[in-house]
Length: 193
Image 1 (tube, one colour):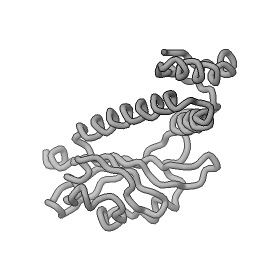
Image 2 (cartoon, rainbow, N blue to C red; image 1 turned 90 degrees about the vertical axis):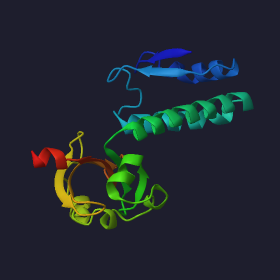
Image 3 (cartoon, rainbow, N blue to C red; image 1 turned 135 degrees about the horizontal axis):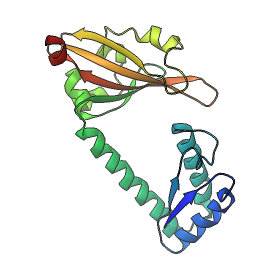
Image 4 (cartoon, helix red, strand yellow; image 1 turned 90 degrees about the horizontal axis):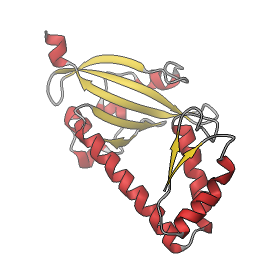
């Protein structure tokens, strides 16, 4: 089942929609027409996180079949996102507030020269020592409103090249720094022209 989520219009019906659709063995897709569909008052990850929290709150009200349907849907969507990220030529990384890599795609492993099995949990300063991560994490650059930090630096491992990274600060709802989402692009060819 598909439903459009409109703040102030049907946000009080979401609970009933979840119970009905899962009770009948259907998946429920809420289509948010941002910003009108912003039921939880925030955009981007904050809104998705709040939506997920609401779904998690309702899991206790679902029967085992409904819970299984929700879990299967999340698994399918996670697999789709993994596939999309791994098709990218640019590296995608998520770094936590302590500077540890918590997510990466295959291109990130290729660009860093690390084996994919060894990249998760690595300190970002070990992977990219030329970027001043401590200064970036302490600065307010790139915070709020979707601003992106852009940097370019040269690396020699696994081979000499110029890398551009685009970083967005990840912050909690209380503006506490939680890390960075990064896109790493090999700019060697463009720089050599």
